[in-house]
Length: 248
Length: 221
Image 1 (cartoon, each protein chain N blue to C red):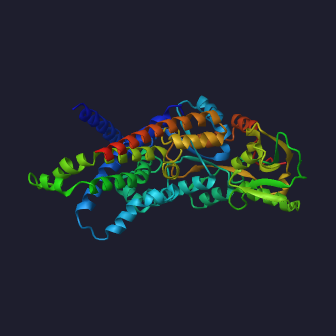
Image 2: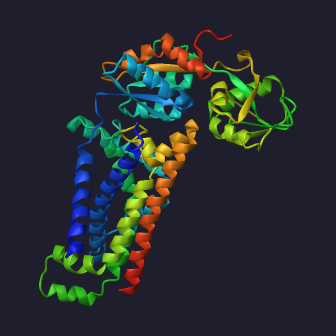
């Protein structure tokens, strides 16, 4: 008898939660920002700074690859603002009328750097192997290939799936050197930046922000404007980003 | 995002999915084992597919079907003005799809083992198939069903790929433990990742213990 009651209780709880789940819709007061994974280190501070100024807005960051977020916007996921690491994706979304951008040339830029493990014996460019993103698959790999080609470097290239994997290879000492964004390098304590590439030898690395056209959130444009504010820029710069249009 | 949110959300999503999966899988298994269904092999292959398919394939299909421009999604949006994408409903749907085969398999195996004589006895009292299911099949197969239920609950708890694509990664709305581990790892917050990893392992181990226990009872019975 006792068993039956316990079973019924579990069933009731489960059914109750199931029913509730199906009533669930994304709360409209939440401002959802689709942000490229490269923004991960800055998001907590960015959110705190924005919500201090606009306490009535609840910002939540949905993070993932730029391509994934672009596809989700195309499928009309309820994203209000996007921050992408791919100009190509941002441009294509704007062409389709899905987003509006204040600045097509990007609100932030990044640099490409060489990282080495703390106790490396060989130093760039006199290394045998370099870990980089896969060219064509991830932008960080495409830029790295452009740099290596421009200097006719012909050592062994190890392709990793993204910047986080490159960091892991280098910090664990599996490779002598790796090529990542400056921001990635600064987020890790286990690697040193030993060279910063000139931004003239690769395509510009830009980050685009835009308001999703479908968004009904009244504060979407406020957030987008905040991204270019002095306060937001100070946070971005602390993590290695540079403001757009000032590339040196 | 508070620390507890991903844990609560994970359990909630897995619980909701497990009930949906239990009801649907038991009904289908009962129906399929007693009736002559045309193209049975085809249906059963479809039912079992999520067990071997990558969750990213399931995520892709869910977005293409239930996204607002999807086949079903367009209809839902036009007629009811709802769109499941990026909501907790999406997370429940993803978890249900991946957990379904486990429950279906357990229910089917359990029902197949029910002796025909039991069914004959029940049939002397009632002709209602619901009663046959309730008084013969479910009680006789109870340990197999418990094992299947627990396993599908645990599978729902661990769903990542389809959830990430279809339900998103929104703190407090759809961030479950697996997505929280992924994001924490990307942020380099290893301590946070370790905590969620540990909790996931402990919960899953407990569930698997229940499965082993139920299986043992099943063979003893």
